Length: 163
Image (cartoon, rainbow, N blue to C red; front, side):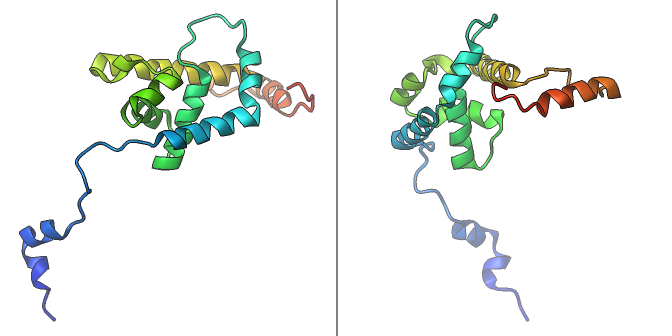
C-alpha cells in the first residue's frame, strides 16, 4: 500500500488545512455578554456579594460583576474557567461598548505594563471575593496541624443559614 500523494508533499498538506474566514481577532457578541450578565443579576448573587464586601478595606480592583461575567465568558467560549483566560477575554475579545459597560479601562490592552496591571486588578478582585466568602480563611500554602484543620472543617460544615 502506498501513501497518498498529499502526504508526501508538505505544500499540499498546508493548502488542505482549514483556515479561518478572516484574520480579524475573535469578538464575543454583545448579546452573549448581556445574556450572561442578566443571568448573574437574576440569580441575586451580586447583591449578596456586595453585602459581604461592603466596608472591607483595601483596593477594590475591578467590580466583582465584571470578573464573574469574564469567568462565564471564558467558560462558554474557551471551555476554561481560569483567571488567566479572563485576563485575555475581557480586554481582547469584547467590543469597546461592552468593555465600558463592564467597567474595563480602555488602556488595558495598550502595552505589556497595562496588561499586567489589568491582570492584577482581576486577581485582586477575585481574591477579595473568595476572602469574603470563605468562612475560615487560612494559609493554603502549608499543611494544617490536625487541631487547626478540625476548626476549619467545622466552619465549613456549619449549618447556620447565614453562613
